[in-house]
Amino acid sequence: MRPDITATGPFRYWVRDWQRRLRWQGEGLEPCYYCGLPADTIDHVVPQTLLDRLPELHCSPTLEADTVPACRECNTGLGPRFYNSLAERKEAAHDYLRRRYRKLIEMPDWSDAELADLADGHLKNYVRASIALRAELLRRLRW
Image 1 (cartoon, rainbow, N blue to C red):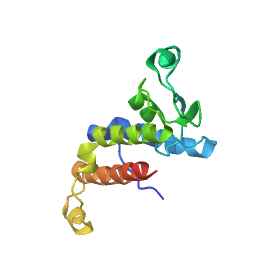
Image 2: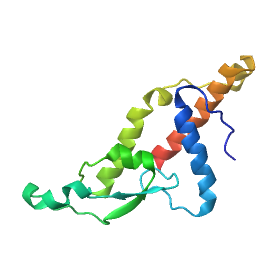
Image 3: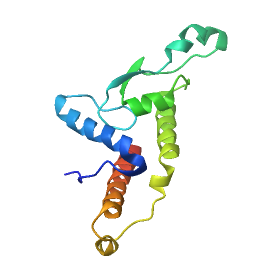
Image 4: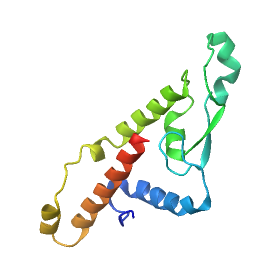
């Protein structure tokens, strides 16, 4: 069971998106090829803006697929950049997530005793939400 998180602080937009995706998991969506979240877009592995230019760029991609299911965050983060393989593209998506959530990844660990010492309120909810988001982000990076 996933922890209950509140949509506060600097991660509130990602929290809302994450909660929406969790609701979609029961709707049979495929997982994102890059991170495992439910995919709500299709990623063109060779960006459509580059299809006409490949011969002049002397590129011959060794790709297994033309399109893959992707979540909006990974698809947007990859943008119209070209990679020679899906593995390179997946690593680029992971690099994007690491850069975007660097502060969340570097957040110190909190023990149960330290959490218990916090008074009930906004700060305690924020720390718990951050811990849950970091756990989910690390799961996405292991995908």
